Amino acid sequence: MVTNEQRVHRAASEHVEIVAYDPAWPQRFEEERRHLLACLALHITGRIEHFGSTAVPGLAAKPVVDILVEIPSLRAVNATIAPLLVRQGYEYFARPSWADANVPSYAWFIKRDAQGRRTHHIHMLEVGAPEWERLLFRDYLIAHPEVAREYAALKYRSAVAHGDDRLAYAKAKTAFITRITRVARRECAKPS
Image (tube, rainbow, N blue to C red; front, side, top):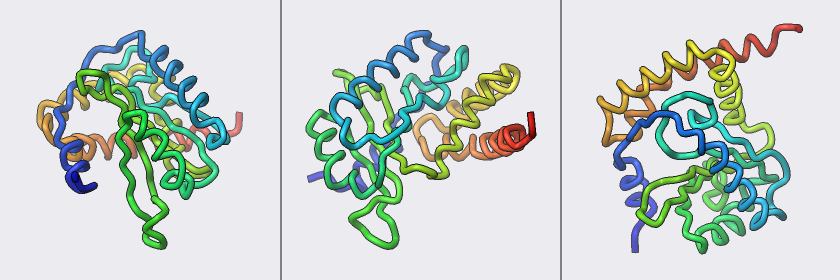
């Protein structure tokens, strides 16, 4: 039996590959969105959003479509959503909350193709979760192609430096993402 720690370690050590933008990514999002609605309609109460680099036209990215899914409560993930998606072959990852180990503080899934390559990351979020700010970052990159190019260069450098350590790769991008999200937040707050 593989433990959660072992699954997390294996997933975190998978090679990071950055590829040129693929115009098929929005369609891959749409197909997965329809699939999630079909099998989780009772549990999805709001938005299903394509985010991350594959959602930014022209931006190089890991060839994995990131999706945010709004659910009423993370409590439902362990009880109903995870068993359903795991039976379909998705891998489930959760960080337990401090208050209740049966309720995740964060929950996400990896979907893979027949060769075992990641195709989608599905993140389950409650309304108002701070991770929804990831959409500000996405929208800012779409509106500012020069910043998207700067981000692409950072991603290529980070993948070379941390190709077999996804946590270090992500950490190498954190300051940039935080800075741009802060700028995007200020722009959104300006009166039109």
